[in-house]
Length: 92
Image (tube, rainbow, N blue to C red; front, side, top):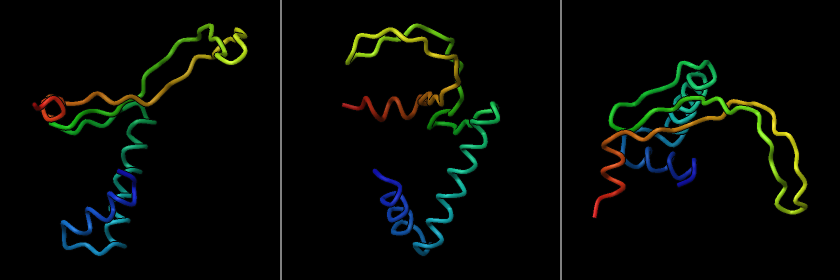
């Protein structure tokens, strides 16, 4: 599902216009981004949590050239699914 699909789905299943649905999605994504960047994280009970995770420096290998390069330390966004979401995904 793409962002536009999410906006259309929200508009279809609520009393929001497409413009209002788009604004709502933008506000939610902005709040998620701010929460992750600040290091505070965002937790949505039953769905999961969004955090930033530290990755230490390491030696990487370019798969095309087999050249070894140093990869700098960095933070990456991380999502940990909640129990309800894991159960829904693994439903038989």
